[in-house]
Image (cartoon, rainbow, N blue to C red; front, side, top):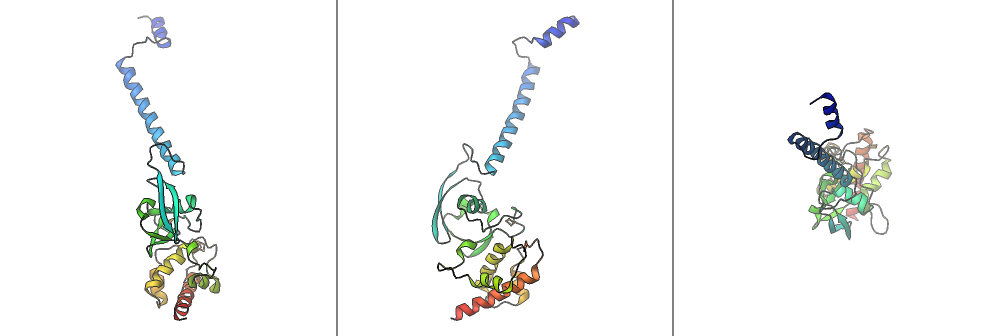
Length: 214
Ligand code: FES
Ligand code: FES
């Protein structure tokens, strides 16, 4: 075939598909599928459920109330609390089980809600920072301890620390300072205000003991 004929063949390919073209098509198609699944995953992570992700209505006990939410299979409790139930007191710091900002109590036990799937807490009770104060607005003794001692700087980490402290103090009402520090070791503070935080939590412990004596 002449050079001119070659150029014509490239510009106007015949309708028949060669093996080479077929393989090229599969590779390009596969890439397209991979990209689509990546984008699909990204969109679901951003909270826009895609078709077929298994989303469904759940009822969960949060702060003593039965709350209904449309929850995807892969959705974390932190995401549901913040974005579906409007409970933004639970903070998301690392979103990978390292900082403790997202700590909530599940059946009284502290958990990183960024690492718990919402579907697994269907038959459990979830307590968040919003559920700690009494219905008449009286703060929980540990919350009061923070106010008494002016603990925390920016306070982003505060809800997580308070929830972890409440769980610890329910089991160990009279800890030493170092025992309480050990009990709160799963919570990090970016402002590194640990000494003041511990003082506030110790005051919270004292407040709790006093409240339980009344
Ligand atoms: S946000 Fe959950 S541990 Fe950091
Ligand atoms: S007080 Fe700022 S992160 Fe803890």
